[in-house]
Length: 242
Image (cartoon, rainbow, N blue to C red; front, side, top):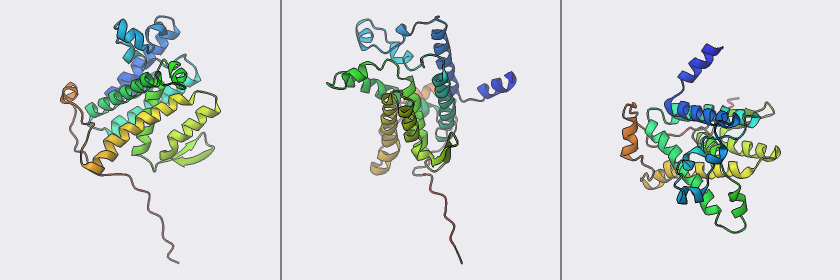
């Protein structure tokens, strides 16, 4: 069993393995009181005035207490982060890293701006960690890249992957958790999908081109040609010849 887990872990692509490891170590460290969550949460005042810039990163690594919700998000992180890195971003590690960087920046910006808007500022002020939102963003992007894959929710009903984010959002509402976290992930995911996939097809321009200095960090990656306009299509329907 231990050998199987070790093999599964080693087979993970580099970004997925690194993020999953950092998330588990951070969350376990906080549960054992080795690390204090008060040193990790997103606090714009401390970032600007006390130069605690690490908070811009650490708030994406802590997944609250170790319970069923933690296991739920670790599963989604390991599954959909890996699927994206191995398939949609195969041979494009730098692009995948840039997607996560873009998502983290958008989520942070939304929370900072939302905290200054009347009527909703209190809701945004209660968002201290964006780890769940970033995980949800990956689920959203994966669903957009694989819209026709058939899925089942707890064996209760089936649906296509295009509706996966909405199914999970509805489940969050049913169990009483905050829908804001999932909605932020959907917003960030849709922003990335539009700018990376939809807008280039409309205009021929790609605004989210990965900077060269980020590509230099992953110089050893295998370069794979990216089709200009390839999308999954619905499965062909059988024709009744009777």
